[in-house]
Image 1 (cartoon, one colour):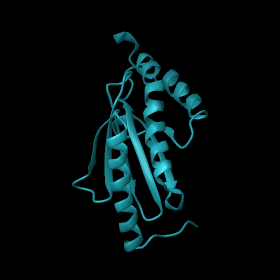
Image 2 (cartoon, one colour; image 1 turned 30 degrees about the horizontal axis):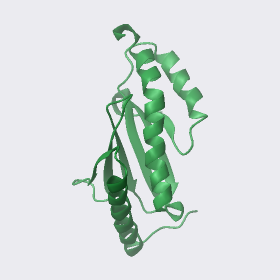
Image 3 (spheres, rainbow, N blue to C red; image 1 turned 180 degrees about the vertical axis):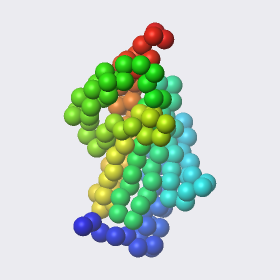
Image 4 (tube, one colour; image 1 turned 120 degrees about the vertical axis):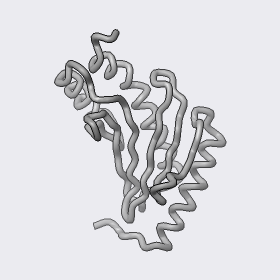
Length: 151
């Protein structure tokens, strides 16, 4: 079982995440905003400006053993559900550190989780960058499949 972090260890990771995310925002022009969630104390938001999708928001949630992360890809498809889900499941095989999932109101999300012992500034950068890249790569085809009659 992975190590359970106590309050002081988690406080250190929180400070590191704050620092790393603000550094990321300062050096990466795609990062539009970084903020802590006011309602959940160990949750952060990173908003990125995209091309295929106007904005991608990555949510990071610090737990006692892991850092969970997710981003919203698109709302529930209006049509061609089976074709879209097959398309996303086939893409899952090529993703590293994330997977497509169906979330609230049947919306499509990209989600992943990392043990805290593996967390570093470079790994955080990889997570945010990967989610951003996956959204940019997958969004156009997914939206065309799930909302075909609108195109």
